[in-house]
Image 1 (cartoon, rainbow, N blue to C red):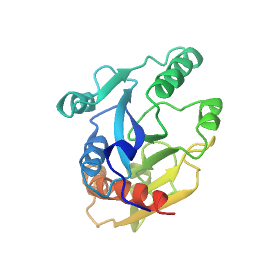
Image 2 (image 1 turned 90 degrees about the horizontal axis):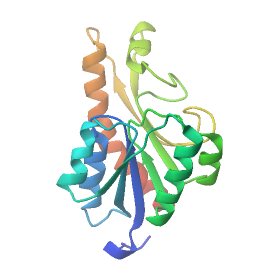
Image 3 (image 1 turned 180 degrees about the horizontal axis):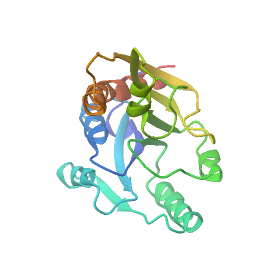
Image 4 (image 1 turned 30 degrees about the horizontal axis):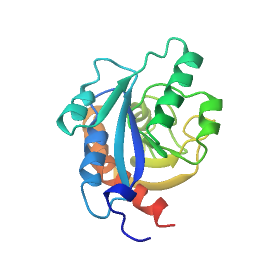
Amino acid sequence: MALLTGSNKIKTAVFISGKGSNLRSLIKFTKTIKSPISIELIISDNLKAKGLKYGKIFRIKKKIFNFKNKKFTENKLISTLKNNEIKIICLAGFMQILSKSFIKRFKGKILNIHPSLLPKYKGLNTHKRALNDNEKYSGCTVHFVNTKLDSGKIILQKKVKILKNETENSLAKKILVEEHKLYPKAILKIFSL
């Protein structure tokens, strides 16, 4: 794939709910010449999400949506994405489950990063569950989002060794470091296919 200049890059929205560390690493990635995407929009369901500060720091438009009425909110979200000509959505610690109709509308255009080696440990509390099962390895997965939770086609995975004295916290930190490297790699992979 040819290198894309600023105006040719694929307009992307990143959805967050928390600290936004994966958002930050994606923003850093978009500043490199090899990045096929540009982040045009940060979407959050949490007014207090710490990651929203990156919108200010990097001058990226941000919008907060209240998901109490999911159908109404998703309709507003769709028109916001359309108005901003968003072609790709990257979920990065976004804690809402998007509806089937929303996902179908953006089929093959939504990516997610998950802190386990899928198909193991879908959903929440992945580190705790891996430790409870005495797993030797855990890791992270970037996958396409489909209508089943954490079940879309896997793009890339990174394995992490679980040490004897590993805690949830130490494992989470170790995996997060790998997540920050894996997400950009996965984006490069899908756009070079």
